[in-house]
Image: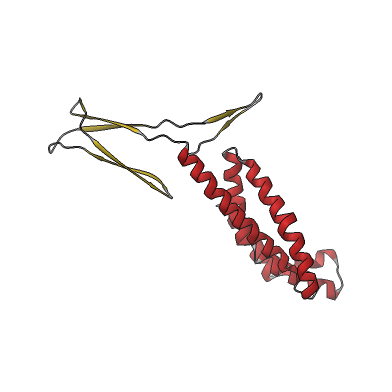
Amino acid sequence: IISPVITGGLGLIVCLFPFPVIQLFRPSEDIARIAANAIRITISGYPMVIYSVIYNALFVATGFSTYVLLTQIFRSLMIRVPAAHFLSGILTIDHIWWFQPISFLGAALITGLFSWILLRKLKRDMDDPKVSATVNGKEKTDITVEKTDSYEGVKLKVYNSGSDGDRVVLKVTWQIQHLLNLYSDIAVLNWFP
C-alpha cells in the first residue's frame, strides 16, 4: 500500500506541477514544454506500473523471479523500443512519449498472465486437505467435507450431524508440495499465507 501511495502521490504532484521540477535543469522554453508533456503522458501509465511492481514482488517472494526478468525484457525490448520507433514515424515530438504507457500496458498484461500461471501452480501443488472432527471428545468418522476453489483461495464446508450444545473440534491438515527450494547457500520458501 505504501508504494502505490508514494508513487501515485508524487506522480500526481509532478503531473500537475511539472515546471518546478523541470526548471531544476534549466532547459530552454521549448525543451521545458516537451518535457512537461512527456512527464504527463508517462505518468498516465503509472497505475499499470504500480500493478506490475506489486505482482513482481509476489513473484520474487515465491521464488519465481524469472517472471520479473521476462516481464522487463518484454516491456523494454519487445514493446518499448518498437513502439517508440513506430510512433516516431507518425507523431510529433510532443506525442511520441505515448510509447511509455503502451509499454507499461504490455508489462501489465504479461504480469497478469504470469500471476495467473503462478496462482494455478500454487493451487495445483496443494493436496486436498484431510479433515477430522471430534464431538464431545470422541472422534467422528461420518463427516462430509465439501471443497470449493475460488480466486480468493479454497473454501471448506464441513457437514457434521450432532445435537444442540455439542462441542465440535475440527482439525484441518494440508500437505503442501514443493514448499522449499534448497540451494547451496539459501532456502527459498515457495508458499505464502
